[in-house]
Image (cartoon, rainbow, N blue to C red; front, side, top):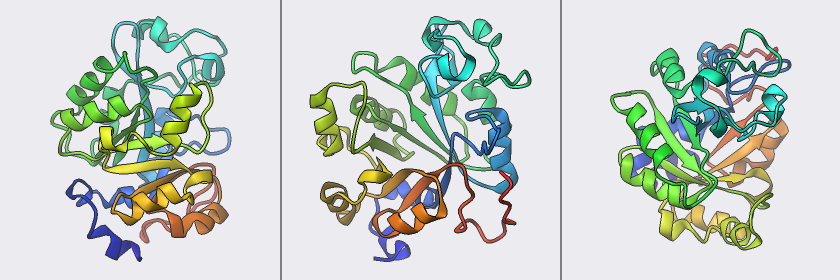
Amino acid sequence: MPKKERAHQYDSHLLGQQWLLGPIAHRGLAGPGGVENSMEAFCNCLRLGYPIELDVQLTRDDVVVVHHDASLARSAGEKTLIGELTLSQLRERRLFGREDLGIPTLCEVLEEVAGRVPFLIEVKQPTLLGVGKLERLVSHHLTGYFGGIALESFNPASVRLLKKLEPRRPVGQLSARRFEDTSPLFAFAASRLWFRGYAKPDFIAYSQDGVEAKVVQNRRKHGLPVVAYTLCSQEDVERIGPYVDGYIFQNFLPMDKAPEMEYDDTL
């Protein structure tokens, strides 16, 4: 079914949020030599008009910051956890060796973007028992923000709470064909979308290597949009196009972007 026809059967949460059914930049537009989840990457999205996917988690003093990994090992060369440092301590760290780039807060990113492009915010909530504080702080920061916003999480309890906190915004369930560093039971259940009845997501964000699975396509046939992650080439887009409604991309610029955008393959 064509996307325009399928959009009519989607939940009302997605009406007016059609950007979710197109390309979304994974951790911003970093490109070769660029830095993910940085102000530089987000400003590239502003320049070209792409929606931004980013990740949030809490510092020790309960500040919502934008960073993917729980640890600073990959981004700053030390094994310290984000949750073990205060914001002032984090300010001393540089991202991927770039002296001009630090870890931004969610408030700083929202203020910089100011509604000019939409956001897909992944709430990094690793445990069921930890659900609550991060979700409520994210919701608090979104109060009064009028730009396009959707939220998502791998944690079904987080999705369920975000649905209650943000009833007017789309909230998605992240899942994958395969999981690492989690219990086999959770991985089995999550990959088969068994938590959808509990979490009641507005869309599914699924790893690109599993979107063709029957369980994913059955949900899509019943009106639950599927967003694939993370596509790394135009060939990926063409291959999975028949199975998804939107996608998250990195390391290339998709050709099916807004027509007013001038194509630039230098990122």
